[in-house]
Image (cartoon, rainbow, N blue to C red; front, side, top):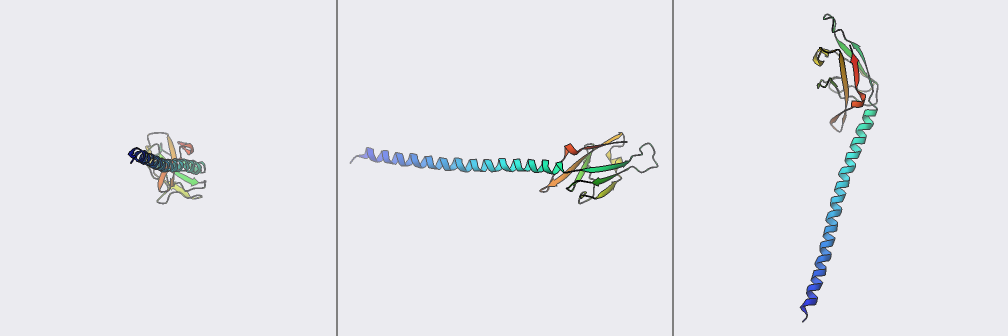
Length: 146
């Protein structure tokens, strides 16, 4: 009996089986990697799309020199999406109530003293909520000089 022929056949079967297994493993890994990359690209483009449609106006009543006057800002959401909150001068001050500031709504904020009244300008950054995560729209920043 010729045992050399049998061992060569076993070696070819093992080599082909290993090649097929490795191909399947690499294919599944590449598929997972591409899904993760696509989800990241879609998420970034959705954030940019939302932020590009965030518009708001603000009318200020800053009377920091007169302690008898109330300092307030009236916000109006003129964009297409709800603004979940604003950050004021980098601090995490929530403006707009529990549900945020819906399109067309106005909100009078009387919290200028919590926004560091030692300065003469206020920088506001709007935030939108996408899939329960808040994202800042830095390109829609508004500066109010008092």
